[in-house]
Picture (cartoon, one colour):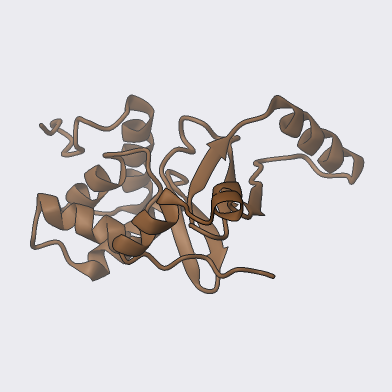
Length: 176
């Protein structure tokens, strides 16, 4: 279902409003492909790579082009509707959860690539105190912790690693 504005109705209200405002501000046209990609980006709270978003969008509309996916990702980043998380070695994932949870952080397993979101009010206070002490006014926080998979280390097996390999995902490089 689409609203009269053309934005997919399944988007959360605050995302829809920010998207509408950004379309007007940037003077972008709404196209069926762009709307399909936006719907695919917010169809799940899962982080996604550009290729995964392209696959999601193609499952909705097979005519969706990879180039339009990349341009739409840039548009959504510029609108501050998604955030890019650098996994190093040229790998990035995009997080569609920052509108609802702007101060969440990420724990990334360097073995299996699993990403866990977490929030901690102590971190918010720490960031606030640290930035003010150094003479800054905090505008946003983003913490990424890289860690080794405890399950893999203790048992020699990790279901997340096996699943990632089956799906053919590139995993973050180990730093040992």
